[in-house]
Image (cartoon, rainbow, N blue to C red; front, side, top):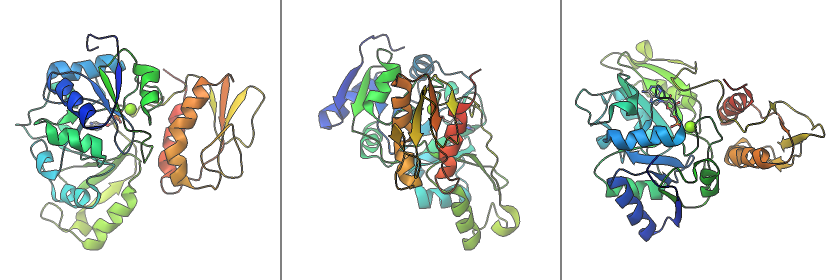
Length: 328
Ligand code: AMP
Ligand code: MG
């Protein structure tokens, strides 16, 4: 907690951003719009500030945070900037791609940010408000999603208040986020092994194919010979139960029982519909808004229509499986 019990919501205009900068410099917590979801930002170089993130979210201390930076140059202050990282960032930064890389010994980061791991997760976001903050402060920003741990991620300022009102200093409101899902997380190790730790808006298979097509040398060896990708999802904190609306969730529903709130897709119309035209990209932007609406609804249970496992649909289904997993 940051010692306050009133959370102020301000427009993310010049005055709002100036206020946020002041709070961040003094070690406070600000919920900030990014192109993925709203993040709960604090200065990543301060143990006290980072501890407030874990406390406000009720986040387990083994679940490390993503460090947000301006660009590759700032990222290289914190991680071993491997050739593959340069390639991936060259294509997708600024944007919804997080890279998990070996941490540099001299990185000035609070220990808790990386939860004691020898690696660090880095992202340069594209949202103009988050970028304005990163330009204005000399330190990087640790920022997990701005929700209580395990609860639904926020894509609006109102969603942030649904679980963090009174627990953080400020929310910068810039309307709904554009991508609607958390970043793709890709781990790259010194051996040139790529691993997708979390599917998201960036298609890591396509990125990997591009890598093979260009035949970029990998750590001094042939990329074709050495690089490989493992699509296994495996990250500390990639807990089975997450994004949970606090009610039982039934997947692959073609219709609803009387006590179910139905989230529709394509031919299945719902109380809230992800995309009537069956577009997975539109569905990604609507997913958390529908889950928030379902959580608030009178119905005791939630049913969700099937979403094709293609493109960003893979990331949607990853989140839906976790929303449906029993807690604990
Ligand atoms: P959130 O900030 O809530 O989107 O969660 C960030 C995700 O990044 C969590 O699932 C973490 O497990 C993952 N993450 C952060 N740092 C690392 C790391 N060093 N190694 C692997 N996963 C990480
Ligand atoms: Mg989260």
